[in-house]
Each structure stands twice: as structure tokens, then as C-alpha cells.
Image 1 (cartoon, protein in one colour):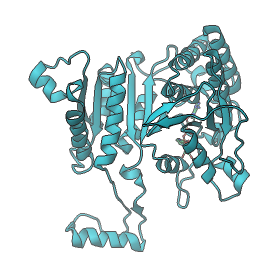
Image 2 (cartoon, rainbow, N blue to C red; image 1 turned 30 degrees about the vertical axis):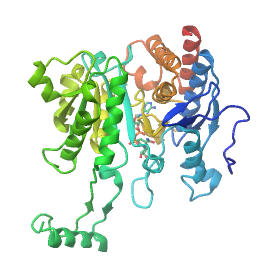
Image 3 (spheres, rainbow, N blue to C red; image 1 turned 30 degrees about the horizontal axis):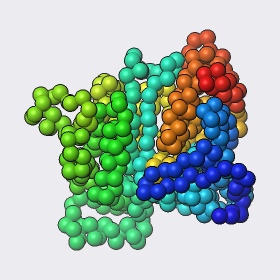
Length: 420
Ligand code: NAD
């Protein structure tokens, strides 16, 4: 495929897929989008660390720059925020990594992140939250945090079906809801904004399957918790819980059991090799991640719960400078840090690139490069323990020394070389 502004590397091989399984060469072409704001700092920094980890494990990444947000407007013209060829290139190469993209608040500008996830049908947003030794944390026992959140990425109130107060559309919806559906005393008089919250069987089941499959693959992940607000929103969040349990009961045989069976038949003691599916109400879960951290492994959630709860998990292990993530679809992955573009620090060589580096770790592990992934984790941890860290960590530890984004990445590369 040829592109207008994207330069395809001269060498390298495309990652392909057959029957939902990735076929990953040792010299993959991987699209990289640096992103807006501090993306120009963390993007190149992460890129060199990831190249070093690949090289140390006998591979070579051929990076292919793609553009969105400000970088797209510069290259493609003022109104082009998400060029078609960026989406095509990511789709065609199956795996990619991106930095943050700015979403101005207000009308007329759809979130590019949401657009990318929806266009590429990246339906699972996955955020592993684990503690790296030496990172400052507000918790007494931060090492107990080792959870992976699976957030549904394509529906819920993020579907974008909403109407502004004062518009003809919102009044049509009000009339329909009041007169046709009988909710005549429910919506207050006067201006009102209305949104729709779709939660489907299809969207729920494919997300919960991903979470259960992941737990089955991992040795140390036994519990999959469905996090919902079904006590209030019975037909959306409650349905998420019911469809989630249905997947567990109907599709996995003895490999997966549900919490009620656990108590009825086994006195609360799970068999060593089975995955147990349970559920918790979202507000309770926000407490449990702090008070019973070690009892949870994998959380599967609708979009909004996932947004809140994954950030709360991230706060326990050092915050946005550290927290990595990735979006998954059918045999495709777009890795991205949890943090945004922090515009006030853009181009200052200041922010922490660890979140984007560790997002690359998720991507590499998905590609089957577990050794490179482990190396990245250990190298970032060793660098943090050395005390030469970016401002966000330095200000919270005693005796640390502040380094910039680029120097931090260079030193992580040195750690990789030492550890390899
Ligand atoms: P933000 O994550 O950009 O920044 C909030 C604060 O977190 C910063 O002021 C900084 O103190 C800290 N921070 C963020 N990244 C850091 C890093 N790498 N190292 C150290 N500290 C870091 O959140 P925001 O200010 O709410 O959003 C700014 C823009 O980013 C908005 O336009 C928002 O829509 C967008 N955003 C994009 C994504 C994404 O691309 N996936 C995610 C969240 C927000």
C-alpha cells in the first residue's frame, strides 16, 4: 500500500494474522504515533527503549511514523485531525503504539482516541496495574496491587448518542420518552440534555471472553470480577453482569466457575487451576481496590466504570507517569499510555516516559516477545531504583535526582544493555 505522507520503511516485514492468530516476524514494521503535547517528548523516548529491548532479544523493529491531531494538521491541512491513511496503516499492520492526543472540550471535535478505538473496533481497553519497586505510592502495601482492568471500549455512554439542551432533537426525545414510553413525571421541566447508554449482549460477551481468556493464560490470575452498577441500572449494567455470567457458565466448562458455585459446592475454596468469575457493584469496588487489594486479579467492566476504576488503580502504583495501557480488537493491538497530552509540559523534556515505554511492553508481550517485555519492565524498575528519575517521581522520594525525559530513556536503554 502506498501513502501520501506516511513513509514506509525500506526494510521490515508486516505483522499478519490468520484465523485470529498473529504471525509476528523478527523484523516487524510497527506504526508509531507520537501524539500531541508531551507526546513529542514521550514518543521518541519510548521508541528508543523499545528498539533497544527488541535488539537485545535478537529482533529489529522498523518503525513507521503515522500522524493524528496536531501532527496531522501540519502535514495534511488544518481540518484533518485523523487522516484515513493513519487508520488504514494501523489496520493493515495490526499492531501499533500511540502517545496521547488532545481533545479540546466542547462541540465540533470528537475525541480522536474514541474515534480510533471505534473505527478500528478495538473493543477492549486493557490496563495492567502492577507495582514497580521504588515508585512512591500513597498505599501502605502498594506491592499488593497486581490487577488488570478490561474496559469495554465501544459502547455505554461513550457511544456518543446524546442531545444538547435546547435543540429540536432533545425535545423530540423528551416527548417520545414521556408520551410514548410513559415516563411522564421523570424528566424535570426546562432545559435538559439527554444521552443514551447502550450495553449490548454482543459487546459485553466479547469483552468478558477476553478477560476470562487472559486469566486462563496467566498463572497468577484466578479471579475475574464483573464490575457494574446493576442495582440501579438494571437493564444496562445489570445486563452486563448477567451476560458476563452467561459467558462464564456456557462457554468454558470446568475451567471457569462462578462465585455462587464456589460457596455452594466448595465452601469458598477455588480449585487451583480454575478461573473464578464473581461480581461487585462499582462503588464498592472503588473501596475494595484499596482495602482488599490482594483479592482481585482481573476486572471486566463497561466503559465508564472502566475509565474511573482503572485510573483509581493507577493512582495506587505511582500515577499517570507510570500507568500503561493497550486497546485490543480481533488480532490487533494499539498500545497507549493512560495519561493525556499534559499540554503545559509539552516539548519541555520533563514528563515521565515510563507509561508509554510500559505500554510498549504490553504490545511486545502480545506479539509473543515475553523476554523483551520482561526486560523492559526490569530495566524501568532498575532505573527508578537508581533514583535518577523524572520530576513526578523525584519530588516524592528522598535523595532522588531529577533527569529529563530523554536522559531517563537513555539510561533505561543502558539498564537494558546491562540486564540483557
Ligand atoms: P493529562 O494526563 O494530560 O495530565 C494531567 C496531569 O498528569 C499533568 O498535568 C501532569 O501533572 C500529569 N502527567 C500526565 N502525563 C504525565 C507523564 N507522562 N509524566 C508525569 N506526569 C504526567 O490529563 P488532562 O490534563 O486531563 O488532559 C490533557 C489532554 O489530554 C486533554 O485534551 C485530554 O482530552 C487528553 N487525553 C488524552 C488521552 C489519550 O490520548 N488517550 C487520555 C487522557 C486525556
